[in-house]
Amino acid sequence: MHEVSRLLQAAAALSQLLRDAGVPHAFHGNVLTAVLSGSSLAEEISCVVEGGAAHPFRRVRQACAGNEDFSIVTSPWSNRLHVKYQRLIPAIDIEILLAGEEGPRRLDGATVMAVGGVPFLTITEFVRAKVKAWALRGREQDARDIVYAMTRYWTRVDLNRIPEQEMNDFVARFPAVSPSWQELKRKYGMS
Image (cartoon, rainbow, N blue to C red; front, side):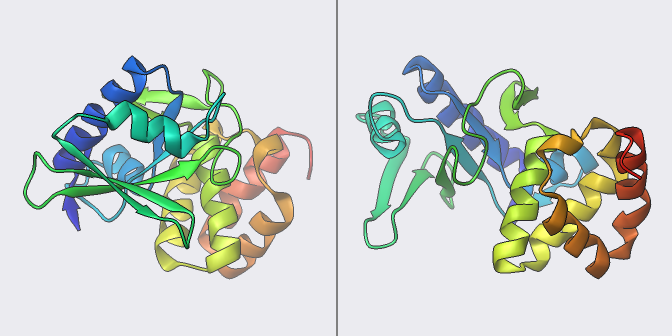
């Protein structure tokens, strides 16, 4: 568990480097539910990065090059990239995720919202990414994040972006989400 303020400090610093390099990005992970709920602790933070002329990992490495506050940890055998914010002790680890695989393909005003000056996936894209992750891995943390977001922010979710079958499976396993899921479907004329 990490203090949310420390995660946000690391996110703001990385975001500034990526913005300066013209790299579209948005943060993701249960740090968003922690911020929205006012919790002081969170377990994870990641950053979805859009590609371009170069692979997203290369764009992040180039943006962080020469900055002593960040170190890059690559795992070529698992195709993962982590950025460590070393200004804080212990260092904050931010996993870099590829847009289109772990989040929306395009990071723009329709898929990104600012929270405290830091770009995060919108509630819709957050729920979508968490539902897809839960369907693949079945992690309890992803389930808690979906339950929180759907029970409190369902009015901000675009039903057209949520994978319906996976969400129906989720609702069958976590009935606390059923009322908001049904209301969302009713709002879109689907029930």
